Amino acid sequence: MKAKDIYLLVLVTFIWGLSYPAMKIGTNYLPPLAFGAWRFFLGALCLYPLAVKRQGRFWHERQDFWPLLLLGFLQTTIMGGALHFGISLVKSGITSVVLYSYPFFFTFLACLLLKESLAWKQAAGLFMGFAGLILVVDPWQVHLARAEFLGIGVLLGGAIVWGLATVYLKAAFKKHDKLAVTTYQMLYGSVALLLISALAEHGLHFSWTLPSLGTIFYLAILTSALGFAILLTIQARYPASQTSVYLFLVPVFGVLSSTLLLGERLTLNLILGLALVAAGIITVNLGASARDKAGFASSGK
Image (cartoon, rainbow, N blue to C red; front, side, top):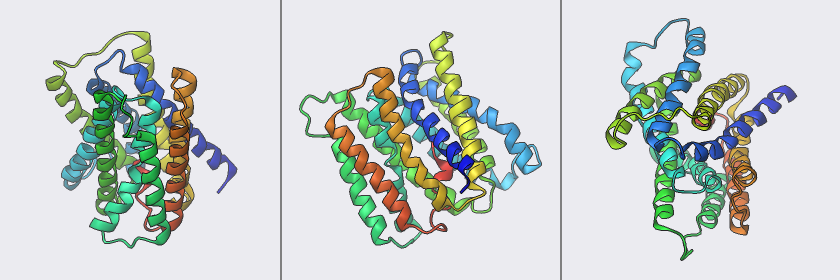
């Protein structure tokens, strides 16, 4: 892999890691579901011109509507909603680690639903990853508030659905351009999330303040649009085995940026858990073939 592409991949993981403290800041100004809905909707609008250029047409095929709608509901409506609701209750550093447990759920669900073989390295990676997740969550803390337990549960549910969405992406969109798929599923999913927000949060609120505008445009333009455009362009040139392993840096940058920017405490449990999760993701990737991982990272947040 060229050095330039490696630098760009690291840049994408840094942008995505920094998105967690940005989301945490944004929840102080916007209801979480509305925040996620506007962020993904604007991101889809930014990606749309690139999708048109890549496809050579202004819209997707008619027969792709229902599959894209289902993918958008899983990946953007449910997972995106869980992410933004969860981070409103949980520290952003912990959120990044819990959510990025999704590769383990993807590997397990691909084995269960797609009948893919599970190599011993993947099994070892699953074990390490879940052990790290337990350390991060530390469920034996007697002082952990009920809201935090709820938030962690919601985030784990989001990670499971993200893994399921990635399995569906791999099964249903093998021959599709992944940037176009990302654009349309994000558009459909964000519209559904807007409707849910309007019902659950009593209207489509938007706070016209500098912090809220700054965070939502950072997440929409840099995270949801530029990040995906760079990642998917690089993935089109290399096997997934060479690119997806870099995604383990996202929770690393998420934890570090949350500590530096928000002053979140860097506990020993969090450090050890993060190390185990990262080692688990790397081991799972090393144990999978390039063919098995073709759909893994193309749906990353």
